[in-house]
Every structure is written in C-alpha cells, then in structure tokens.
Amino acid sequence: MSDTNQTTHEHDHSDEYSAGSLSLTGSIAMGTGVMIGAGIFALTGQVAELAGGLFPVAFLAAAVVVAFSSYSYIKVCNQYPSAGGIAMILQKAYGPGVVTAGFSLMMYFSMVINESLVARTFGTYTMRIFSKESDSWLVPALGVGLIAIAFIVNVLGNKFIGRLSKITALIKILGITVFACIGLWVSGLSFDTLSSSGSSSGGSSVGSVHGFLAAVAIAILAYKGFTTITNSGDELDNPKKNVSRSIIISLLICTVLYLLVTLSVASSLSVDQIIAARDSSLAEAARPVLGKWGEWLTIAIAVVATISGLIASMFAVSRMLAILTEMKLVPHRHFGMPGRVQKHTLVYTAVIAIVLTVFFDLGRIASLGAILYILMDIAIHWGVYRYLRHEVGAKGSILLTAICLDVAVLGAFVYSKSQSDVLVLITSAIGLVFIFGLEWWYIRNRRGDQMEPDMDHHH
Image (cartoon, rainbow, N blue to C red; front, side):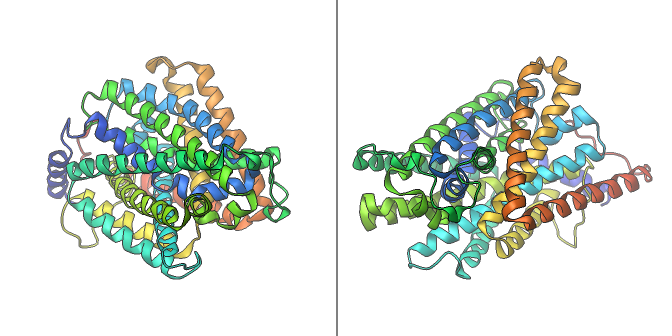
C-alpha cells in the first residue's frame, strides 16, 4: 500500500467515523443488537444439551462470568477511550508485537464466527415458515443472502446503522419480553423441566458439573457482543462515561431478557424437546403456548433479531479489522479493490463469514467461537492484571477472579468436546497455529522494512 493511499484512507476514515457520531442510546442499541442477534435464539438448545434442565441457570451463570470479564474492558476504556477497543487494550498491555496481533486477530475471527452463527440462525428460523428441516441446503443459502444484505447496508455508513439499531433493538426487546411473559403466564409458572436432565442421548455430561460449566461457556457467546462497544470509543459521545454505561446497561438488559426467555421455554417444553429442536427451540416453545400464530410471531422476532444483529456485528467487526490494519498489526492487500481500508475489511469479513456459514453447522460454529473468545478474554485480563492495573485503577482480585472463571468454563468445555466432538478441538488448534504463525511471519517481515513511515494514528 502506498503512502498516498494510506493518507487518503486515513482521511476517509476520520470523515466516516467522526467524534460524537454515536449516541449513548445508539451504542446500547448496537451492543444489545449484536448480543440478541443469535444468542438466545440459536444457543438455548445447545446450552440445554449440556446443562440439562438447568439451562436457565447456565445463562445466569454466564452473565456473572461476563460481568467479571467486563470489568477489565470498562476500566481500561474509561482511562483510554478509543476506537481501538480490544486491540488498544492488548497493545497497551503487551506492546505492538505478536501477542497483541495474534489475540486481536483471534477476537476478530471469533466475531466473524458469531456472524456465521447469526446467519445460519436466520436461515433456520426462516425455514420453519415453510416447515423445512434445519439440515436443508436452503439454510446456509439464506444465511449467505443475509450476509450479502448486511454488507450492502454497512456500505451506507455509521449513522444509518445507529438509527436502524435503535429501531430493531426496541422491536427485539419488546417482542422477546412479550413472548416470555405470555409463555410464563400461560404455563402457570410450572418449571418441572428445571429438575430434569433429559435422556441419555445428550451424552454423559448432561446435568453433570463439567456439563453445566461447558454450557456456561456456550452461553457466554450470548453476551460477548458487549465488546463491540469498546471499538466505538472514538465515535461515542462523552466516551469516558458512556463506554462503561453502554456496556453495563446492555448486559443488564440482555441478562433479564435471557432469564425470562429461558424460564418461558423451560415451562413449555421438556429438556428432550428443547434438544430435539435445538437450532430453533424458541419457535418450538411458542407452539404449545401460543399456537401457530405464536410460532410465526417468534420466527418474525428471530428474523428481525438476526438481520439487525448481523448488520451491527459486521459494522463492529470490519471496523476492528480496519483498525488492526492501520495499527500495522495485520497484513493487508487491496486485490485491486478501490476505496479505503474499511471497505476492504467489509469484503474480507463477509467472505470469511460466508465460508463458515456454508461449511459448518450451528453447533460447531458456536463451539469454535466460544474457544477463541474465551482464550482472548483470558489474555485481556492477564494483560491488565500484569501491566495496567495500577495505571487504570483496577483491583487485582477482580481480575484474577475473571481469569479463574474463564479457565474453569473453558476447561470444562474442552473436556466435554474431547468426549463428543474432537474435530472442533482440532479445528481450533489449527486456527490458533495459523493466526499466530501468520502474525509472527508478518511482524518479523515488517520489522525488516522500516523505510516506510508508520501511520500517525493514536488509539
């Protein structure tokens, strides 16, 4: 990339993402939009498959783990609000080397994996309208179509996404709340499912301690969208206060919603029924309670949630990769494409998400995302504890607690997958070797070419 092009891209970038272009409500809407995008719709059945009838408690436990995790992000972002988000935190802790680049790229891929999860969830729920099975080839085809639409919407810019996020976030929150409350009322608050572990088809881990902890690891994916807020520090109005407010309010909203929804599902279906319809268990739960119209209403909410979730996620993810490119932490190639770096990263993000959507099912997509995200999360907490805690005024005991919780749920999840799906662990290991191998090669070669001036960015 030439210096002239770099200068042009910087100019375009600053124009597009101006200070104060994202309000507090817009940021909350974006955070909840990414979180509700697929989490509760796609993951309820998978969490029940591991935790048995205690799946609502697993979602609540995941909220506790994520609350401790958010402490690191809030403390650093309050001190250094920037568009760099996670990359900025890692760079301040570990410096501009392979560790920072590798874990930043790991976060990027975990977010793209989440996009493919959202896309397949959209396809799965949409196909229920036509009474088609979730293994139909139309599921990934619809997911690919949604990714293409999200790409086009993102080209329209930041403010459009902010307005869209506010509208769809309100629709999702009201729709899901109504669904959950009606479900609980009609069922007479019967929670017999909570004491059930389901049949043995779910595997020996169902209902066990390590099964429950593994379920918490998957449920964490329903909350990880809060990290997208940290990437918007430069655009957020009054970021030193509003980054932390956005994160806390988004997490509280989602925790209450998830608890209501999972209790409603538990009151409508048995564990075996939830597992049988694991990719679209919310729609299945609506049928006995609200009939066919209730099922269609749930499908409509899921479609709105996944469409808006993917649009918000693609904005945040491509934004993050553009920042990593500008920080010279990842290699970049134009491949003949015109325009600034942000447009190129949108293309890369969409292509990777499409490949994952086509070749992986929901279960494996979620598993890959959980492993990469929790590993990156541990690196964040350790970096803040080891290098930044005095600088940002963070309490070491809270940081160490966050690390211990992450290690516990990740260890249980890896053990569970070693018993049921070793391919997920092999794919994760290959991915880690690829990410850190690529970064080692790139940074080593970059250091050998110091004639090109660094970009003058301050994150």
